[in-house]
Image (tube, rainbow, N blue to C red; front, side, top):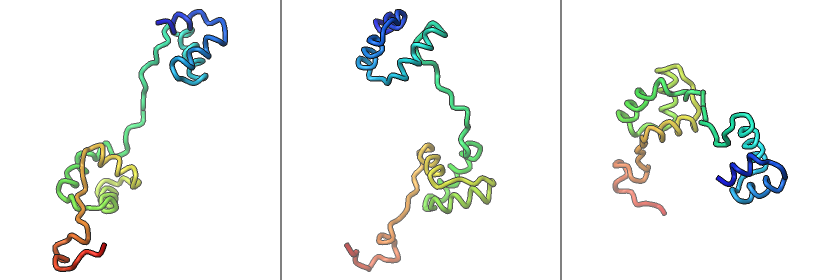
Length: 124
């Protein structure tokens, strides 16, 4: 708690420089910590808040069921399904993030490994 003691006795720029080096933080972070200590009497960071709900949160269960039912679907097909069934337009990266967050895998079969190509040699 040496850092809090030094922060409470904020007299010199040397203290800020020492804290930056010691804790590996930026000068702006030290300045914000000083302001927080002065304002709240505590220098520990508060909880972070993200007030923006994920766009696909309302359809997550339906999306999960759809991927389980058709695990060979592409992200493009899933995007079209979400737009048609739930009137939600979503980007490719956003859908990928949701699929990953739900721990789902899209089990695509490589074109070279599909059953209809069983007798065709692989071209490397």
